[in-house]
Image (cartoon, rainbow, N blue to C red; front, side, top):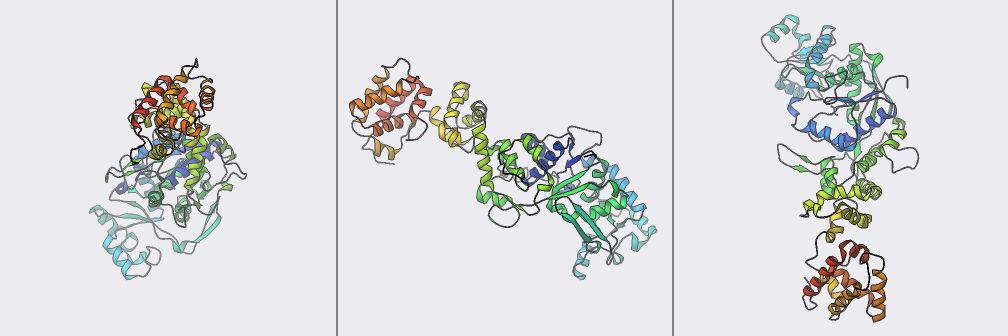
Amino acid sequence: MAQDIRVRFAPSPTGPLHIGGVRTALYNYLFARQHGGTMILRIEDTDSNRFVPGAEDYINESLAWLGIEIDEGVREGGPYGPYKQSERRDIYRQHVRQLLDSGKAYIAFDTPQELEAARAAIPNFQYDAHTRGQMTNSLTLGAEETQRRIDEGQQYVVRFLVEPGRDVEVNDLIRGKVVIKSDILDDKVLYKSADDLPTYHLANIVDDHMMKISHVIRGEEWLPSAPLHVLLYEAFGWSDTMPAFAHLPLLLKPDGKGKLSKRDGDRLGFPVFPLEWHDPKSGEISSGYREKGYLPSAVVNFLALLGWNPGDDSEVMTMDQLISKFSLEHCSKSGAKFAYEKGIWFNHNYLMEASNEALATLFRPVLIENGVDPDKFTDQYIAEVVGLVKGRINFVRDLWDQARFFFVAPITYDPKAIKKRWSADTPAQLKEMITIFDTVDDFGGPELEPAVLGWIAEKGYHLGNLMNAFRLTVVGECKGPHMFDITRLLGREETERRMLAGIERIRIDEPAV
Ligand code: GLU
């Protein structure tokens, strides 16, 4: 592409970044990287009423966790800053003035009560060519009275003057050409004197223009604003450099129609936020993909396929592969069902591919959470444990369930297994087994297994019962990896200690609990 590709992710810091917003950021990033372009992060914080402390940091941390790198932004800086809208007031003021001077916008004083009254009196009221003549604005009051009111300190808004009878064309790279009659648009508020800030529409257009954005890739919920944006570019005389639009499909509920919501996540048990979020006002905690034990690569892969397909049957793709395969042409128009199970599937896949050492690092905090000091074990031990059980997990935290006995000896024993496997002869047989351990030079070596199995066969003991009783004393239940892998890692001393403790504690006459 001859043109410089410059895209932006432009979240409003009004709360935790929703997973749909993360997908928008990801698609912008993939597109930018594929074209050797620039990825911009712009903070759209002009709605002072909805500002939430911590939300901006949350956005930065989420993108960093997922590997979505920003080239220009609040932290990174860049030639078109500031990248935070609340620091661009002067720029917006000038642009509002420009529209007022050219007659493309006007000043309105209507109070909320007056607007309410108009809505009640006029069916389907909208502030437009048909009604603006009856409202309290600079068009009806005249320049002098308008100035008098401003000087007096009356609050006002600036509204965009939408000409009726126009066909407004929006060319969308995903949806094709959409034509909308300007009559259905209202005279949107562009600026409010009360907080001396522009609204989303004005700030968004001015910044996209000034930051030389080439492509606006954003969620479908912004499609209804696009005709107004086209008219704004025109009003400023910027139509020639208007960015191309691409409105991404909605994320839908996993089990039906309608937009994905936080409630769906609560109901079905999956997060809708990248990171855990602690609401500063309510104190409510919402779960996040990171804390649930998802790997960022799995989340990226899962999200990439929600609304885009690579055109072949590739599924597991790294960020680099996604960058080379991504295309807006392969984004779908229709909503994408949020099939969260697929996310779990991706996570399992990526866990299987991760090295034992990398997983061991992720497992350490889980060990600490469960009261185990990981420093009491070598990195190699933890990595080997992880290697033995990882085939059975979907999340890093599942490792605890599968591997706890590698870190703490059992103190209770599965009563069902006792009933099935333990008999009056078991203690003596286990004690005898310990003497067999003496016959091999290396307890952790390959000779142990044939020695024990050979002895069981020779004595005619019940192989299944005895091996399971053995496992019961060491693990606490009849599960886990291969028995001789467990004993190799635990070592002779610990294995023996557990066997003797089991013999001491397990009683067959005990009622099952
Ligand atoms: N600030 C808007 C948001 O929160 C940006 C929409 C756009 O990308 O134009 O999503």
